[in-house]
Length: 421
Image: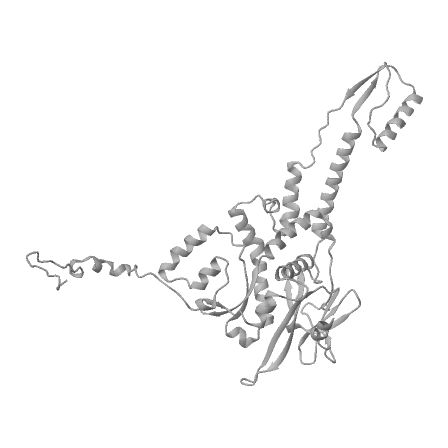
């Protein structure tokens, strides 16, 4: 692909491994995904991904408290169409899956540069955004101290990119200096794998119990003494029928009584659901009501604030940090992932909030649109309206005094002609 040629830069000469405060060599293999084999984990992560992919990434320029869109920038263009292979929602979906499974996600922007004749500054025109999945990541630095990332891929390809040109998203960013996850820069799934293993054993036990309940339909009681040879024969015949999953009825004569067994098999009982909720779903911050889709406003609000909002803030800050220069950020340029469909307030509640704040002039017009999950409009930049039917509470008394009320008195004795009218 030609875009690979524009995407990657040459590795720095005389490079060395970047230093860490803890003494570990900063190279990391990518990454354990055994947990994805669990259908419960897939469903829980899908709940998060399906909500995150509804976000609308927008290039805005903030002046004071007023965010204004920059619709014709090259950055907004790639946010609307990240690359030839993906739509915006697919790009966000891919990026979020990589982050949640690997605790690290890398997005590489492609661009070309030119020198501004007026200012002499280097300008960038962005052309695409590509989420990548390396098999190993090395952090290195050159003689000047600039940080680079050396990516290795499963097909044997490797390349080096300046770290400032890579959008790096980290999940559970704690003990490691460069990567999300544990000390080695990987997701520590040991605890959740043990839980998933236990859950698997429980499900296998339910399956075996169900199979056994259908294999054994009754008990045969012989009313006479049975010699050892007959007993062995009957046991072998019973074992054969159970192994073959046949009807489970044994041949009997008049000397035997048959007692049917009542079948009671709970496929998914309450304790099992509580186990799934507390041990697996809670690990990802997804309550059972979200998984089943049977939630109310308060439950979704809690899910948003606990699980979704930290990811949204992280996305916005990571993209802003890497796509803008220091000067552009000082001028108020930001990337905001607007949660259009994620706003947990109902439309009526949002409108009520706007109606309360609008008469006081506390909201810009574009802030009202953002509150409704709509993109800000350029023609509304800096617009803020307020009602004239409000007065200072301390001055309210003077507006009620008689000297401030003018009354026109009409002399009924005077004749008004048509000309005077």
